[in-house]
Length: 292
Ligand code: NAP
Figure (cartoon, rainbow, N blue to C red):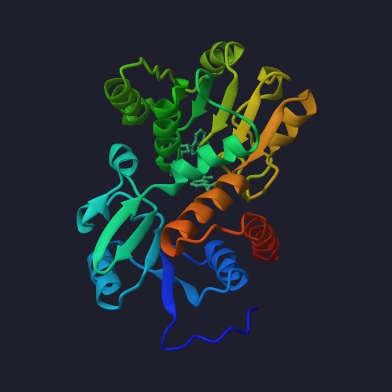
């Protein structure tokens, strides 16, 4: 725990969501502020769905410089902001707010953090065939940034009755003028899509703690030429990533997305380059503590 002092000049940042007690962001950001010699402090706020409007008014009244936004507020907060980054506007969800002298601007650093995590591992998605599993919040962010970057997407989601995947695919097709297909997440469709794929992204919660023995893709469908990205970060090495690694495939953990979305938010609030390695180490430490 840091022994920094909060003073009358300290700038406040934080995260709003419900539940919030398992967030990894406070240790990640506070360690980064300290490392960079910034008089900033980051705190978690549990904000219930019906109190979101008051929370945003509070951000203005208390002059909080920056907020991260998590479930269930990522979509509902948009009409309460003054400005939206264009990518966040297309996605229709944000996870970061910057307060510039009372003007609140929303960003989606889940999307930019995901792309950064890929690029940092030497993976350029432009022109690549990507199979994306899921159609929830993470999948939405990932799909828009991939489509914008020029990847060819197939989205597979379990529940067809909600039309989430189809709706998402048709919005992407409309926005980027390139057809995005959305077949059901069934073994046969998955096998067919993976046969031609360069990159697999799991943006479902399958394999997340405590269900660590689950995997969204059986190991017989994996191949050495595939790059496998799992948005799940707890555990850092999911069953999907372990089995993909065993075939010789390159694997990237959701930990990287978490760290790069944090780094991007940090830079938006402070204007200072984020100490990414330290932030990664802090998340790994916080994940180990959370398990105990
Ligand atoms: P969400 O909006 O609730 O969406 C969950 C998705 O998982 C839906 O597509 C859902 O499909 C699918 N799903 C759940 N259980 C399933 C099952 N048994 N079989 C097949 N599909 C299943 O959640 P989210 O916010 O997108 O988060 C998804 C995952 O990404 C979580 O593990 C989260 O921790 C992770 N995430 C990571 C980061 C990061 O920075 N690394 C950022 C955001 C999220 P249905 O529609 O069929 O229910």
